[in-house]
Image (cartoon, rainbow, N blue to C red; front, side, top):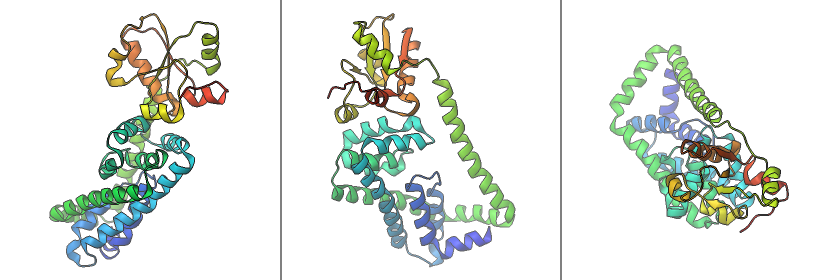
Length: 308
């Protein structure tokens, strides 16, 4: 542990740069603790605060520009990939789209402070066509605020940070093992939450072919689109589908019969958002509710039309 502390003290810029780069690239390796420690070691004289900020901004821009360019080139496929590999799929695209639609590129100023928001927001900026110059400016400022807060807190509470590190140093190899166990438990908890979420949202689905058959036979169900308005505008929607929002669900479904057949769809992995809304509808007394298996992607893949 003493060797690791000496490494951070002497090579803090490199350690912070690599940690931020890896985290912003999408790996679940928190960079905030390392930035705090680097801030606590400012008095060592091995680096200056502005050098740390520059390292954080540079690492963030490298990773974030990759997501941005991927969003510009591949569109919504990038967002789906992020959600597919995310350990927090429930906080993925819709919330980010809502925030970004309201605040635009300026939301990047606080993106890194919001769990699950940063990587989606950077890719979304490319998807919706935010200019590269505007993206770089706001993303760099956001990275500077994020990194500056960690460095400032580390320096302000440097005595407490150093006390904790001293305890870990005295523990030696046990301290390293303790840190690795803590990190392993963090990842295990996130994966458990993910598995628990998918288990809770298990229910019968309706296939695109079944839905198309109902529509063609004249028995069109109530079709609900739980995606954001930005997604509907960008990728289209199933004809006659009605947009709904979890926060205004009761108002959106005013007048819909409790016995009506309802189909809910989204574009997220495992139909997480659609299944969540379906569960809420069942709790409100709607008894014939099913998410669309595969969501809008499966509907389009089967050759069925979408409106725009």
